[in-house]
Amino acid sequence: MSFNLRKKRAAAAARAAGVDALLVAHLPDVRWLCGFTGSSAVLVLPSSSLKASRPTARAVLFTDGRYIAQAQAEAVGTRVVIATKSPLAEACEWIASQRVRRCGFDAEQTTVAALDAMRKALPAKRRRSLFVALGPLVARLRQIKDADEIAKMRAAAALGCRLFERILAFMQPGMPESAVAAQLEHTARLAGADGMSFDTIVASGPRSALPHGRATSARLPRRGFVTLDFGVLLDGYCSDMTRTVHMGRATAQERVAYDAVLDAQQAGIAAVRAGAIVGNVDEAARSVLRRAGLDQWFTHSTGHGVGLEIHEDPRLAAKRMERLETGMIVTIEPGVYMPGSFGVRIEDTVLVTRTGCDILTSSPKAWIEL
Ligand code: ZN
Ligand code: ZN
Image 1 (cartoon, helix red, strand yellow):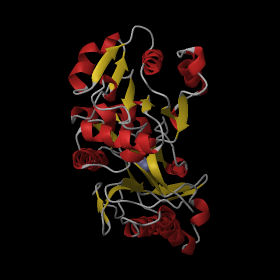
Image 2 (spheres, protein in one colour):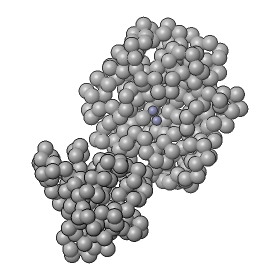
Image 3 (cartoon, rainbow, N blue to C red):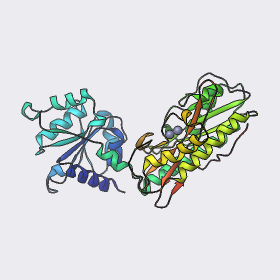
Image 4 (spheres, protein in one colour):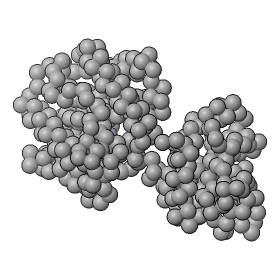
């Protein structure tokens, strides 16, 4: 989908929400709408109630002096204004100077301080009425990935899988978790990743019971689980996958837990299709662990959307009623965590299709013993 089409769809959503412009300050939204990847940007998107022939009908990107060349190269088709004070303040002044009566902003992404600054940039008589708090209109559009985004997400996921398969040969008992993370991240950068999509999780031995155990100086055990949860950023898009491997011989209890998590993960994947209610996908995974008597140790939701950001909507959580749609990309990642003892999580990123899903993270999930 072209940036123009994305802008059109966002403008239509703004119009439906009853505003004649949208102030977009969340950087992933700005990037999705106009292609600009810099760290300082506010995009003002007039909705088409302002006639196309008027200059205001074009989106305007406000950034700062560091980004003159980059903004012109990346935000093709968008007017670029280099702000001399803050891009946010200048965007608001510009909005006030146009025939905008009501301008929407994303309440979920706007701090109290930012809203205060936005209002202070307006003439006093417009401060009360101009800005209208809305939901995440652009993020909602971003949930459905277009062909170009799907290709990028596939490439990111495939790189993640290659990294996983290579790191297995590197892992040795006694090695610090941080060495595993460093090797994985080094290899990712050499393979073209822009960086990691979140802090790499390497949680070994009893630390595998920490769902978000970042790599520390703890050493890989002779016998015990190691959970690897990591993602690359490639072309702006995140990958996300988790595999849990075992060092040395496992106990019967560890094997039972692993098999139950794998069954739950596969049941979650089997429940994914366009039209499925996200709470039901969560329940499909959770009920497997319930039958195995392990659900009390599954302490988080089953998955989340992923794209330009590592955590996007929809959340695949208990009782949530949103429906999956074709083109959404979500994770399925049940786990069990026995405090002080061990934990297991298995996570794939999948593309929702009309009849089911396409697993983007194709690395094997069968038991791996190192
Ligand atoms: Zn993950
Ligand atoms: Zn995840």
